[in-house]
Image (cartoon, rainbow, N blue to C red; front, side, top):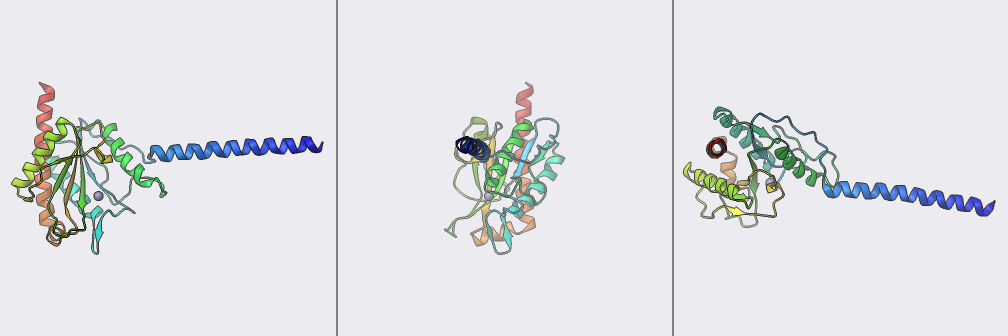
Length: 240
Ligand SMILES: [Zn+2]
């Protein structure tokens, strides 16, 4: 009896451990895949351009007292969308409010936030993904807009068109050409993708510009002109 009871308890413990092990493995796998808990958005018709203001909610992005990246990029994204509506370009905003997109506030949140943005673009069969951010660096002299692109031919074409348009408005005079990047998660959409750093929060002149509504409007005009140009060009090529 004694031995049988011990065996039963041992078996129960083993079963319990196996169950706990499975749950832990499942949670780790889930975190690893960075699955998003947010629901997919409703897609606008056609192949929309995804305007993706980075960060949001608990994630302010880069910041200095009085300025948060998440606020600057959201404002520019909303202004850009207004112009694109006029240009009749269907737009999907990954967020139109101050919210984070990673679901539960745990360790996997940031990965899920990025995955959600990519999944939303793929889900809506986007024609272009445009992710907006604000830069920061220790070198306070560094300034200007930077354009990063997914290493694909169409992303490169879009990147150079954006760069050209941003110079012509003129929004900046930075000499650096668009930069291909393979290690930026948000550039891993099926659609051609660009990440645009709108300026350096760590540079006082850029910071002043980024805080100025008139400058944000100019940025939105440059971004929407570029987006509309590339969208209609691709649409035309697609229909030929
Ligand atoms: Zn950012």
